[in-house]
Image: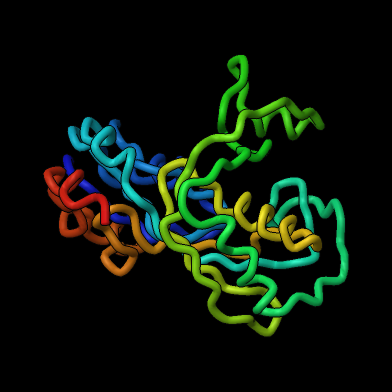
Length: 230
């Protein structure tokens, strides 16, 4: 089967778990995705099947849009709440104080990739080195935050962020860096991808829906690269 599958990825599935599962559902060996979501993130995963995998290069530079939660006062080794806590401090920070630092992160910026990432150094992924307690020097990479909006504060005290960004942006690193700029530390407590290029999460299907009728869920490959930037 050739085409695009828009998947609403559930928590605790890696992006490659989804692709491996869909290989069996579609009975198609060639299945890949156009942008990784962390296991504890949910939302839109654009999956290409069959001859559609050849179109991946046309989606590489698509903007992504996320809804994230920021927990202040907590720093972890993975820069999200699922890692080991390294430091915990009181964080009595007002909306006005957060708003005051957000402008530093809008537009073109340099971001230091986290150790818990799939970037390779000398043939080894950084997260493999990090899991053994190691750390290596990384170079900051240019990214662009096109939109960064502070929304609500929930019952747990976590703040909502809406983010539109370029390829290569780590949202948990953005949360970590915002916490550092505020002086109290911070980490990401939730993440949902709501858009990738022209595709939105309300166009996506659950894995159950795809298993039920994969052919109905397939979109034509030609949609990749059409209107990918906004």
